[in-house]
Length: 160
Image 1 (cartoon, rainbow, N blue to C red):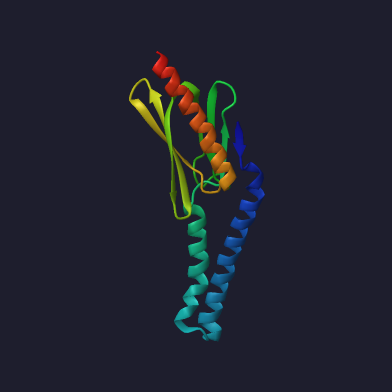
Image 2: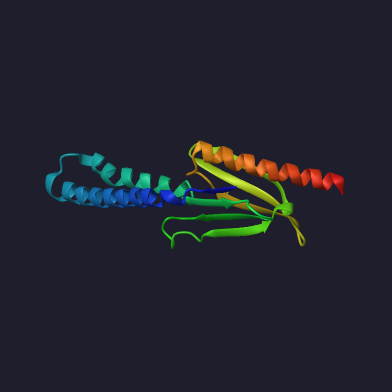
């Protein structure tokens, strides 16, 4: 199964551009308000604070682009940000039989995927992905696919 929200990259770029333009316009309006008009008083700080808060929320909710591929004998996960230099992209590929368990954490507006895989050195390794920008259907499909792989792995371990 393949899952990707890469087609929404232009939407996320647009949102990013609008937020930066709002911050620039708010900063300009703040300086005009403070130096020339002086109508709002202390509330003029909201002209900068609100766009800044929206930008922080946009980036705190995680990397925007998530790709998953379970076709073949390997699982492939990719997670990257719309702005390439902001965060290092994650790219992991490992055989299906190494998947031990997974967990999807849903906090307010942030969703995370935690994957536990078997490792020669440490026993288990925990991989973390940010999936906040997936739709409910995409999230259900991801959960279904990972459940299928973990169920198959448990059956194969029981037969050994």
